[in-house]
Each structure stands twice: as C-alpha cells, then as structure tokens.
Length: 81
Ligand SMILES: [Zn+2]
Image (tube, rainbow, N blue to C red):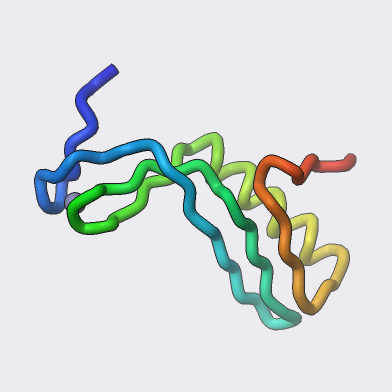
C-alpha cells in the first residue's frame, strides 16, 4: 500500500464515508455512506474506481425507474438485474 498523502495539501488521507448526489432532469439521486478516502486536513474526498463504477450503475438504474427522488445507502443497494 502506498502512503495516503493528500496531493493537494499534504495532509493525511483516511478511510471514511461520504455521500454522493447526482442531479438529473427528472430528479435527484442521493447515495449515503459511500466508502471514500478523505483528507483530514482539507476535506478533499477520493472514491475508488470500483465504488465510482457502482455509483454510475446506481444512477443508470434509478434513471430507468424514473424516480423523482431516490435515497439509498451504498451498502444496502444491490443491483438487481
Ligand atoms: Zn488535503
């Protein structure tokens, strides 16, 4: 594992959680408790590629359902096919 140092401020990045919000023409999607790495100094957040991919899939799925307002917890959300 490489050392997690913030490239912006040089602070220490730690494992944490964030929330993800996507706005689209029909409504709003909010996914809570998304695993992220957060800089303790400046608050910048990073999301891993795997997490970002799942968030994209959630957005695509919710858009298909045409919901105006959608809130989910990241870990509770499983993509039904
Ligand atoms: Zn920082």
